Image (tube, rainbow, N blue to C red; front, side, top):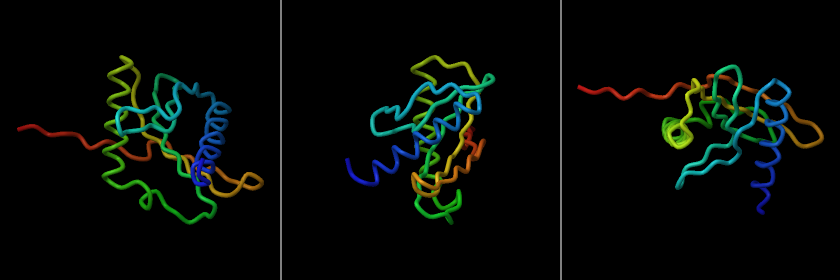
Length: 123
């Protein structure tokens, strides 16, 4: 496994621990549909949270640096596939978790409702 993949998996592990401590149930990790992926799917209080995890050694990145319209569209498409294939009736939410640092010294920044999917309009 490449170093960046190990670091990413480590960050996802830390976010799962954080979510469980906050009362979430983790229902999926690294769920894939074709070429799309959801890092973490968690449930709490009638909500299903689709969590995108970004692990970085150094702080400084902002949400807008890592979540662009194309990334949002990919996450929303994957979430739609997940909801449809599992017949989910919970309210969806899109969260982002940053993990900054190293295993010996890290910080998690969790952003609930980090973005909202674009709604399609029909004429």
